[in-house]
Length: 105
Ligand code: HEC
Image (cartoon, rainbow, N blue to C red; front, top):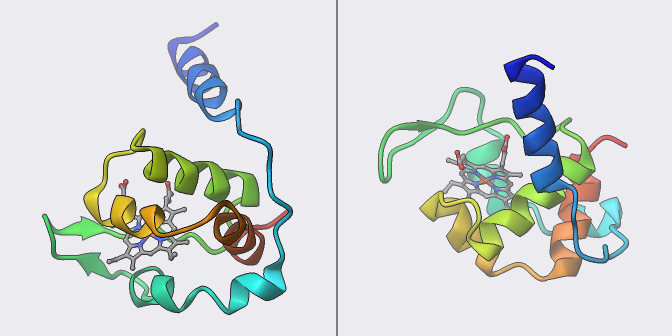
């Protein structure tokens, strides 16, 4: 296996053991994105705190990926301060709904 493949497999393994998933509703998610669009819906937007940082596009990523990312921010496994603050205020249901709204299946 190449280094890259090993790395990818490792990353995947780190994301896989997800807690029991709440069933997400894209319809419910639509009502919850007001706190996300300010950063994630602006093409090329860079957040200015703590450093100039490119905000990733989340629309169109897989729902599983978005859910795993939000759970990781909430648990502190991902350390970006802005997203940790946001994710800390989300319930499992919020995360599932947002993932269903933003994600592709
Ligand atoms: C203040 C600006 C801001 C707001 C508001 C915000 N985000 Fe983020 N988000 C960011 C930044 C900056 C990153 C990149 C952080 C990093 O590199 O870890 C990010 C990363 C993410 C990621 C990971 C993307 C990836 O490619 O790994 C997801 C998923 C995400 N945000 C979802 C959301 C959701 C859902 C909301 C609303 C509940 C939200 N964000 C609100 C700035 C914001």
